[in-house]
Image: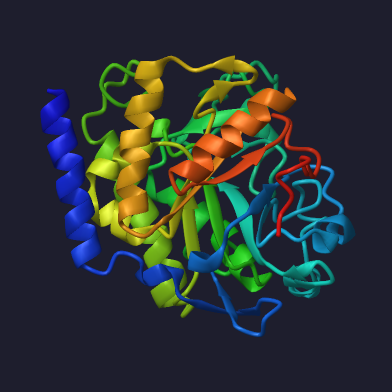
Length: 328
């Protein structure tokens, strides 16, 4: 079975590479310090901070790529303006590409689309007034609720109109999106914790991500718009998915906090991520290690495989620069 999986991954990588799978890493309007266009394919360091972001601090850093929330506190009132995003992209620390975090596999009760009546007693179970796509709360992340992401009404919140999540992000001038809870297909699919056993869950997530990419690049005319799913790297078996994304983010690759991951899990993830890498896609890896020796080990292993590493705290509430691993 392992040999069959390895053969399939290699075949997918060859097919994507033959099709020019790196196409969406093309030129962006930003420029780097040398006056050349800054493209996703030229990125060699990144930072990931979702809360308590200080735009001046992020701008003063030398990171090529910044992943942050589209709002300073997640609310509509603190949504970043086009002027703020433009200033961050052309900031004193050097030109940057900026991705907006967007969860597509869970709903968040602090976002603009949330209605209190959906879970009025806050017990984690949708009430009678909740839409059909809303599932139970994630016990590990209070305020986050599973969604039936294949439902057209949920997808309509994510993209498709001037009021949708993606359209707001594009209007603000972000260079792309960082899509979270891609692995929701495991929750809803056969053997998943939902008990739904939905056989089409994996294919529906692939189709969802592809639809987001097509809408941004074709419908909205942002041809170089970046699409980066986080986790769900086993979707490497879908050549059309690999071709559609600009890169992939992966958390907890070598370490779960400061504890090593099992070798079997590491090797499985590396095989998947290498499919994206072989297709010319960026591989962004975030491990939440805090011990200096483990940080060094993480950066060394990631760089050796052609991945782009960032070690930080799991709360993602600070900009982290480690000695010996500062952005250039």
